[in-house]
Length: 335
Image 1: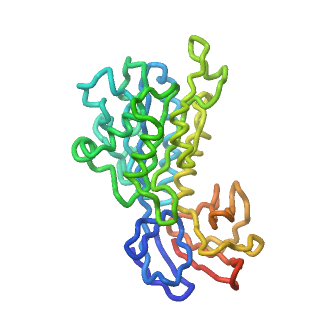
Image 2: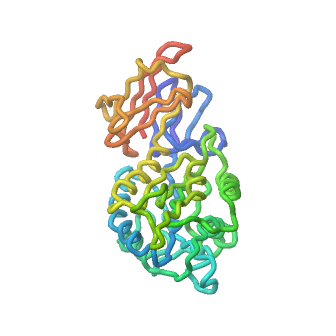
Image 3: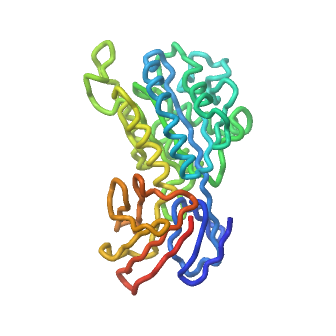
């Protein structure tokens, strides 16, 4: 949907910005007088890269209990999402239809916000395939799943050029791929070039062993930390979470908040005087609060929304602020 700007007052719908032929900007729009028209897009493609070795059986069950909440949150914010899953098994069953970077699932291989019985479809992806292969080749599986070979055939219908790509690695061990974290970061940077605001067009998240802990020890008393998965996630400022907790509700919440925050971040044209920032959503004033309000990153000129204050895609957001260099501006936006 396109809206024409009128002075400093403008409205918009959906959640990402593309202007004058440039690449998409995920987030709420900043003010820019040179824009004649802007297009917004709320597309997110989510790829789960899952360790299906026997040691992960209980962890996958814990994850399946929390996925309904993630769907509820994304549907509540009216995201246009696609979701698929691939296993980390690249070696033991190379002839099997579910290995080698092919999407898994008994019938539905790509879930969207219009898919019926989304939870059942996801659980089929998560629990429908188990391997005796003990080595998690997650980085290799990711690259294979998103290769032209797979996207043009078995994995069609998932990847969109104009969407945010979110990768979620799930493993209780290290990565044994031939691909390095540097290889993987370069691959994703090429597949999803940086956005117009300089941020990455992709974000990686990790659910796994993130530190030495008795709760994470294997039968031989070792914590197998997912260092390589963490490196890729940290490169994109993604969410890194422990798989060793009894429940994964907080973990799934962290990941969905990471995704939603990227598409609702507001980039200001100029640095703001923090004390002058005023934010309202649907006419209700929102406080500066890192849990259920907004925060301001002066270095990035970025307003982020958190918790209950994250706006839905049909909310009306108004931000007043005084730039450091010029007088007060008023940006009125309809997401």
